[in-house]
Length: 213
Image 1 (cartoon, rainbow, N blue to C red):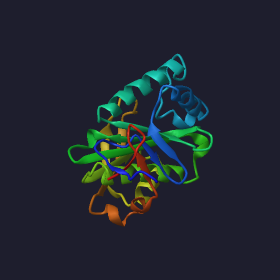
Image 2: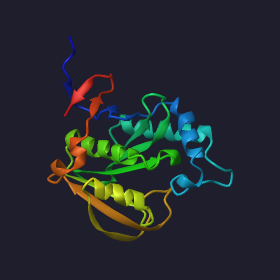
Image 3: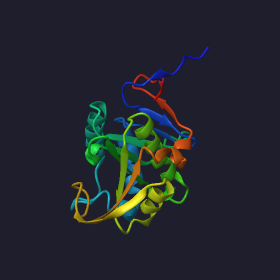
Image 4: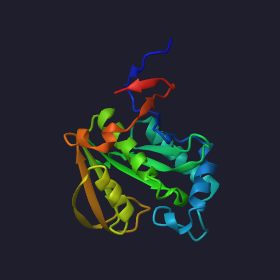
């Protein structure tokens, strides 16, 4: 007999969608992360700035995972790795960031180059939107992107986000290049009408127990 799903008291650590496993990153994912970034070449250079020494080392990726895992465990910003269930290959990362303000979260993501054009970014972002509104009970979600990033702007519109405007001369993270950004928002009252609300999603807690909102 199956165990009933528990009501969640902390954010989910693992999410399962039709094509993806989204979970909190682990130390052993450092090599997967380095492979995903290195194999993507210039595609991710605006997200992962190269240093005079070259691309980020394995130790650098491990340090990033350690820091992001600490934030996840403390219920701060959350980083979910997006993995292929069959191979364990890292396709990218999803973010739920608290810099959007009270009662809000910002959704973000990056995707490796050879995973583009398959609808994976939309599925990743949909999982974050559904998690934020149904588990975190936020009132608003933000999505921001570079004006040249037409793919991310398209994902935002596909998920029902409203374009609020072009914010000038911004740098919201140390690894970002300073410049204009596009701002999109989605409200909790609008979420039920979105495709993300219909996404098939299973959620599991720190102990691996299935949880419900």
